Length: 119
Length: 115
Image (tube, rainbow over all chains, first blue to last red; front, side, top):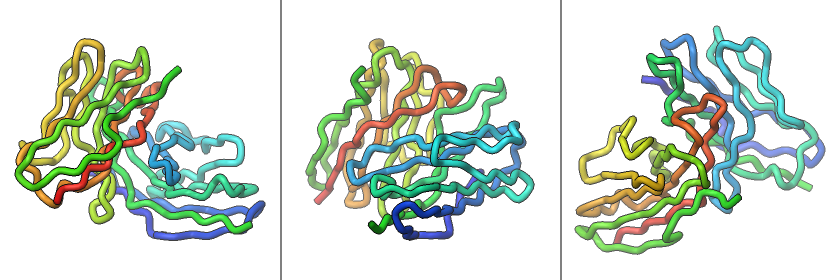
């Protein structure tokens, strides 16, 4: 079974600064997806960024980027130019691929990191 | 386009009762997944449905069940409620099963409190 570990229960950052959230995972699979989701107080989970394991290039989405180290099974999220609206719980998540090559809708989540942004 | 709609938003039940939660996916989405979120256990996968068939199931007791209708709407049912079932239940939909160019879109959840 796959496991996802987020070792930072809480992080804080000053507005406009950069912060990195850590995530490690354990799997015996070679192909999979990794995700970062954001959950603000509204409770809705919002996809921040996605990485396919077969892609060596790190994914980026505007101010959000990842550092994907497949051999180390590490998947960190960097938020640049932090904004007050970035304050939320951030979850790292893993998704397997089925035998047929398509992925499952099942995500395995880490415990989450609460990010506070100070003005 | 309307997002994933979960009803009700809040629910209070007593031990031993049963409860049904509803999820309407984004229009055109055919796959629905359910998750339980608690402070102690975090986010845990319950089940995934596609074309009215359960495609994947998490490690939960048989008291937890679900179904999907022909219009892709889904319901989950919890029978003989226990205090530990108090949680936020999240529903997510996607165009097709899995994540291939079809990421999950989550609803705002149903907060279930068991007393």
